[in-house]
Image (cartoon, rainbow, N blue to C red):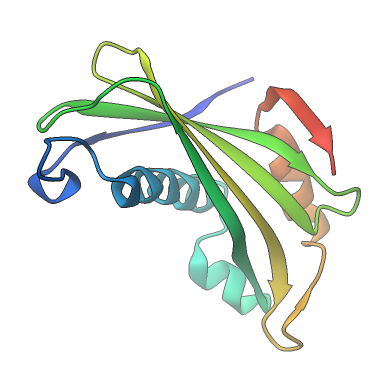
Length: 144
C-alpha cells in the first residue's frame, strides 16, 4: 500500500513574528496535500463538480509537536482516519514532518460530501469509494 506524500517549502508568508509556521499555513499544507491526492486519483475539483459533488469541511484541529522554520521542506502524509458506513462523512489525518522527518504536527479535518444541486450531504459515487479505500488508514481508524 502506498502512502500519499506531498513536499513543500515553508515560505515567508507561512511564518509569524516569532518565526513559527502559522496555524493557517499548516491547514494550507494539509489542504494542498488532500487536493493533490484527489487530483492524482482522477477527482480534481472540476471532476467532482461535473458529478454534482463537492467536499465541505465541518471541523479542523491541529496538534503541534515541533517547530518548523522558514526555508525548511515539510512533508505531509495523508491517511484516512474514519468515515461513515456510506462514506458520506469522513475524517482525514495529515502528519506533517519537518526537514529532519520528525513529526511536527497532526492536522485532522472532519468533512462530508455534498450534492451541489440539492445542497445535502450524500455518499460519493462507487468508483470514488473504491479509490478512497486504497488510501492507507491510520492506526486509529474508526467507522463513524
